[in-house]
Image (cartoon, rainbow, N blue to C red):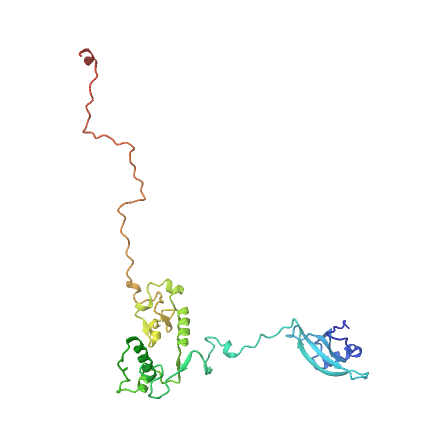
Length: 308
């Protein structure tokens, strides 16, 4: 038996010596041959001791069989309380459980799978309620009209013209139907930004494909426009030979399958320099006299010395 380990008090002598009783209980609860050596004795309370045995079960490395025994006051017999399998300090444990909503990744959704959306999803916001009354933040609502009028009065110090009302020929419901706002929830500003950042990272101007492309998608004939505010920066590629076929691409993205890649104008070459600064010109140190001009020097012969 190994040395007893105490936490706060000395273990009961009879309970600490009941190793054989604890081992027999562990072997009865476990499969044959999986209960190892006695590891530790832990004091749980007055006359309550837990014996820990090594577990040799495959897949339970570092786990221990915990057998708790107890003894009644003034009793000479030790009784069995419980037998459980507990992880040790270096036990092999499963990773911490993560909710499915945090484990889910793009591409995990398969045929027949259902992905419920939370009611407070930041990517969505309520759509049109179905009433003909304009929303409170609409430019034609009464609240906004009073606010604008109050601001204009502070600036102009005078009455302002009434704001235009919604056209009588069409109701707000019909306009909302045309704009796709009659759904229960629509994309919020946060949802638009998240989608734009994700698409820009996959098929944007900073990708290696776009950096080596001859031109951007904004001038490509295979680009299919999309509606809404996202259409100002994105479109759908319709080139079957492009790596982005059927994907939402940024207008600044590009690839070698550009519709005008064969007729792309080459960049103009600069004109040859007038002065070639790479060649060394040789210049004499002294100026040479011209051949046609000979200077007449005074004669100093002997005849001149005899005739003064």
